Image (cartoon, rainbow, N blue to C red):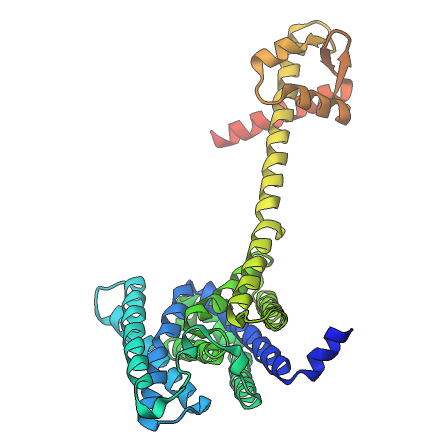
Length: 377
């Protein structure tokens, strides 16, 4: 109870938590489109491309105003995005190579600019290096207000162009056949991703921002095949990790907020990969195990039917050693499963035979197999 009271009374914790919440929701929503359009690396390239803009903005204005620095970051990231498209469309260089070129060149130039600016007499404790790894503790209420305004603008545009963004995400050719301005819509959607990255620079920094875009959406993709539900889940996962990371970093001294948020996102991704229904690794393993058991059961039924046709009495018991000689897999377990279903009956001396129900089931399966084989011919 005391801790809950401290959340509402501690100014720094309020601001950091609010900033992380806004970042988690925005990056979760916009990251969904990046992941579905197979542009996960685009977020990494744009986030690194924003760094030169921070240095140039301070160099030109001599101002540490977050709005000025973020405008510079946005312009730089947007220019980097346009250059990626230009390289891809006008040369034979593939998109992944163009992403790597822009990422490395812009990031290297950004580091040079930050180094130069930090050595200027007017840059005493400018704090520009916080844009590399983020420093959520330095967030002010005015910063959160700016983040909220940018996030609101991005989410509003997503709502307005929802149908158009949905079409170009899944079928660009169909969108062109409808007469939609696909190129302009792609530029707009990419610009919104730039806004999401700019929002997170102060909280998680350039290096970790790509994880904020990719991880929530990748987790949400494991749980659903519907875009609307995926966006809601992605925003929820991003918000949960953001708030949890902010609170955890406030409880443990000198624990950075950005890395903690990414750690929580990693836990969510791992949980989703293992336990998500339909796509989770655990459920895949269970389905495969059930399929193998079904195959063993079907094969054993057919083998028992084969033995029964040799005898005048179709319910004549056979030694399990004979069944093992022509069968594969866990024979004993399969026979127990057949017994539970009422398809086989165990006799003394480890002998087994079909029941009347099992005989009918074995004949039905054999007829289905023959019909399928004939249809294939």
